[in-house]
Image (cartoon, rainbow, N blue to C red; front, side, top):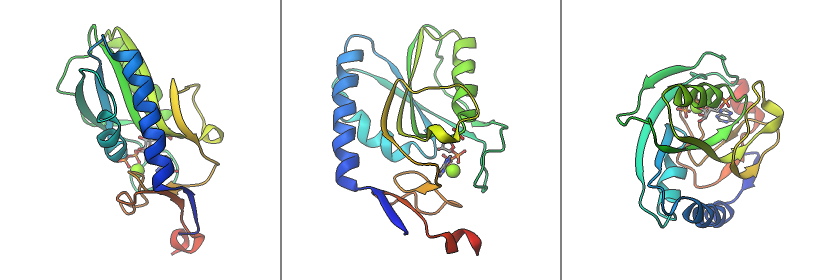
Length: 175
Ligand SMILES: O=P(O)(O)OC[C@H]1O[C@H](OP(=O)(O)OP(=O)(O)O)[C@H](O)[C@@H]1O
Ligand code: HPA
Ligand SMILES: [Mg+2]
């Protein structure tokens, strides 16, 4: 690892803060919490335990990166939700918003499917990567325009299981 950007302790502290905010916002709403696979899995697993409210959760798998470092711009649904979003207060959980391609596609889809409300919580926001106008309602940390890994984020499927967020050494990409 070239650099650790966000430590395990910082992540866990932030997850607790986000959980407290979401508890207030959703305590009487029975939201449908949607995790976007695979990257959001560690964040989702930790965050839902810090939301002290009844909620339902479901998972959707979309992909626009494959094994590349830049977004293809083409979003594919690999696995759709099992639950209908119609009339629901939907809370989307993401590990990162980078180009915005993934989330702009999903937010449009959920509006088309007549969700009552759609909000976005992301652990990481990379505003310099943006190609689409899309903003999170809540974000844990802003990260620089570098390819980051860990806590769900991968480079060719590796590093998702790290408990922290880091930047890889350039040699790793150049191999
Ligand atoms: O804002 P964007 O540029 O669209 O990038 C963000 C998305 O890209 C990553 O997913 P990826 O498609 O790599 O799938 P993965 O979660 O399975 O790694 C990440 O987990 C986000 O879902
Ligand atoms: O910086 C990133 N790292 C890993 N996966 C990603 N998907 C979008 N941006 C990133
Ligand atoms: Mg990925």
